[in-house]
Length: 173
Image (cartoon, rainbow, N blue to C red):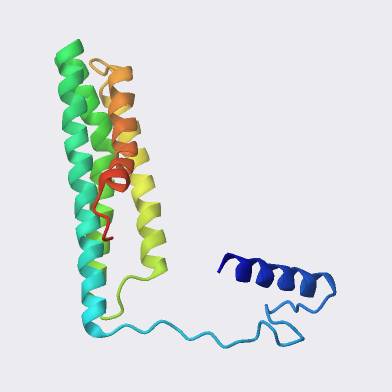
């Protein structure tokens, strides 16, 4: 199998070198012009994919909440209540917009058209804007009590907790 892949790559590169490859991705010698069949799912397969996607989104949100609480508890135990609250606020500045985004995607999956790329990118934009606004609001309103190292630790741990889902999550997704 690996040698077939190497031969195909070599043939593609040779076709490219001699100018037999056009801008639309097809070759003039017909070697790479095999029709590609689109993937077609049955309604049952689509329902299973939607269910897996929702489960993955919900798992991500639950892990982010759990990591946020854990970081706040550690900050509270190490440095007191102001640090614990700061860590919780730092984590919430990302977890809250991310949860809204995830629930919006879950709702759009059930629409007849489904989730579109525009839905995803608009949601991402709004998530980033809301997170930025929350960070600025906490920084301005919490000047008296905010412990910056704890705040940043909560924010970073909430941001990176998605890696825990990928590393230790279910393998069927």
